[in-house]
Image (tube, rainbow, N blue to C red; front, side, top):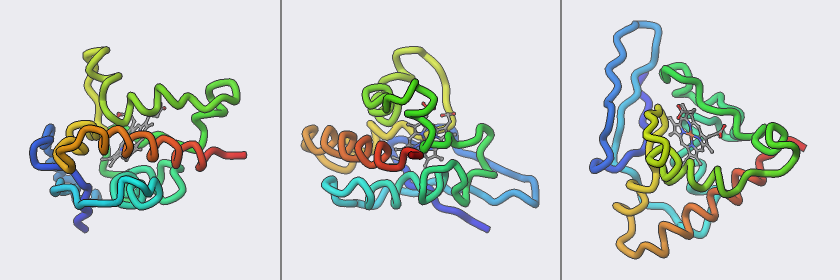
Length: 140
Ligand code: HEC
């Protein structure tokens, strides 16, 4: 089984070569264009393959990841009931990772969004609408 996860070619970091037969292969492809106005369209296109359509961390590529994709429906619950919007936005763009010099399994979307649209205000809009959409997935 080959699963495609969107990643702009400029952001081809850490290609995964999975050999175990039972595991699906994750192939990194150039990100397709989506509407920056639709958090749902972006989430379904870019995030659901790992995080699952409802954000529970159970997407089809989840088993192929070294680190399990986060359950995005629990972010508010794990933060004392308040959705951590700034942290989520920074996580999506990669600003947080860069700041902490950490490495991670999740693609750095800031780079992908910059490659999609030359206008940086569109990247900001993408991040904002995706963050709003992730907020809407919170377990009640
Ligand atoms: C290739 C698989 C993959 C894709 C695609 C992906 N993620 Fe992730 N994501 C992960 C993994 C794995 C983690 C766990 C931490 C880590 O290693 O990066 C994570 C963690 C996160 C976190 C941090 C949660 C926390 O506990 O603070 C957020 C927020 C997030 N992802 C949102 C998104 C959004 C929004 C998208 C789509 C733009 C997306 N992810 C696409 C794999 C993915």
